[in-house]
Structure formats: structure tokens, C-alpha cells
Image (cartoon, rainbow, N blue to C red; front, side, top):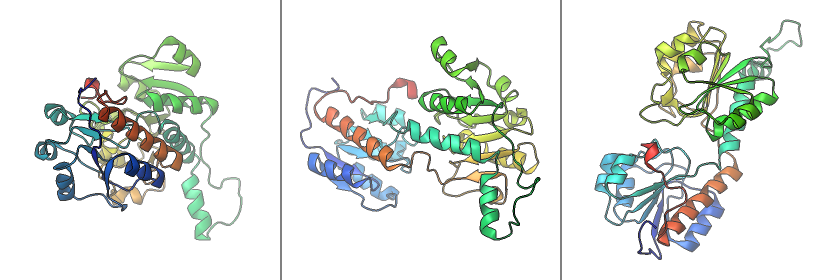
Length: 332
């Protein structure tokens, strides 16, 4: 138990419009206040909400930093994040104030892995370039040398971060004939390695210098910020493709663009950005980069499932129990 006292009708503030079934159920269960727009709340609006609620339900676009947490009212006892990533929440500040933080792990795994696999296919096969060529009206029909890309079968995929999503990507990639290599803080059990045909590297540098495609699946935190910096990007061979559907801050974006422009990387598939929604204009000009608008988990099924996890966490806390998805010390 977290607290023997129950919060029978918690005031819940939801910072972004969620799927209607989720908002309807929250309205029925809690004293809920919704931001019924697809625009994120201003910092001032967040501060006002946090001053007078029991539960805040933010999303990745809400920067819940130490200053906001420090200004929160005494009622705020739970930040029930809508989404798995929690790099936008200052966990140390929340812990210092006695505020629990929960997330929604697992429900978006398969959707994100699908998007990652789509990027892994799209970049070497030049799908975005081909689609633009057809729309432009400049395509003159099939030719033996037209739009030549590279097959992915037989290539080596290096996965940075082999949690739920990394493993789901590995299962898909194995079916396409890629060999699986991975770097993780902890080695996977032998049974999982055998099932995936995966080779573990305790040295990230060694893996980056060996593989043909690099896909990032580690959470963004103090240890992973700029994990792929200029030095590590330089370790990759010129034919390598870089895929990122995790968080933009894990990659030194300027160094990545320099490598792409200089021919030291073959291409990139990007679903996340360092300063999203702002994108480096140099990236927009590169034909060998496939870009999607942070839509890796964007399925209706996934969004509803995430909302259901948020509700489960709030109900458990309101009943005086530890929420099932409480973020614990290991995330700090």
C-alpha cells in the first residue's frame, strides 16, 4: 500500500484531448477536468492545474519540470502519464514532494515496432523518394537502373536498447532475414537470445562499427542523452542507415546531419526530433532521409489501451494501493 487513506473522488486534470471512450470513462469515474483541444496546455495553465488537482495526466508534450512541481498544490499526489516515456517529468523533484509517477508501459510496443520496421524498409529501398517521384509527374516508367536501393535481407541490424520495443523489432527484423545484434546495459537471458538469434555487445562502440543498420530503442535519460554523439556517429561505416523512433535527444542531431550531408551515413529514418515540432531545415533538404511526425505509437487501439492503463493507475492509487505502473528508482 502507498497510503492507507483513500481518495474517493479525485480531481483529475487531463492536459490533452484523449480518445473519446477514455475521456467518457474518466468523466464517469473521477472529478475530471479536460483540455478538449489538440493543443498542449501553456505553462501557466499547467501551473494552475497542478495547484488544485489530485492527479495530473500529462503527455510527452508537457514539460513537468522541478519548478512546476515545486509550485504544485498539496493536493497533487499522482502524475499519471499518458505514455511510456517519462523523460519530460522531473522524477527527482516529484519524489522529493511525495508525488507518485506512473506511465503506460507495454501497450504501445507493437505499434512502435511496426513503425520502426517500416522505416527500416523505407530508407534503404528509397520509398519516400519513389513516392515523391511519382507525385511529381517526372517518372518516365520502369528502367533497369531506376530508383535502385539496397535489400535488407542479409544485413546486420544493431539495436540500441533491447527492452520490450527492441525485442519486438528484433522479431520482425529476423523474419526479414536480418541478423540481430544488440547493446543493452544487461544481457538478455540465453533463451531470448537464442529465440531472436541475437548477439550481445557490452561495448556500444564495437557494435556501431560492425552493423549495417542502427535502430535506437533506449529511453531518454541522463545516461542516454547524446548517446550517439559525434564520435560514435563517426564509428559507423558510410553505408549504414540510422533509425530513430525513440527520442530525438538520444542522437546529436547536428552531427547526424553533418554525416548525412557529407556521405558518411547512407540515410536515416526519423520519427522523433530534438526540438520537435521544429526540424533542422538541412534535414528537410536531404533525399535520403525518411521523416514521420512522431507517429510511432499513433494507432487508435494503442491510444485507447494507454488511456485504460492511466485509468487503472488512478483507480488503484485512489483505493489506497500502489499503482501497477508506478515508475520506480531505476528510472532516475
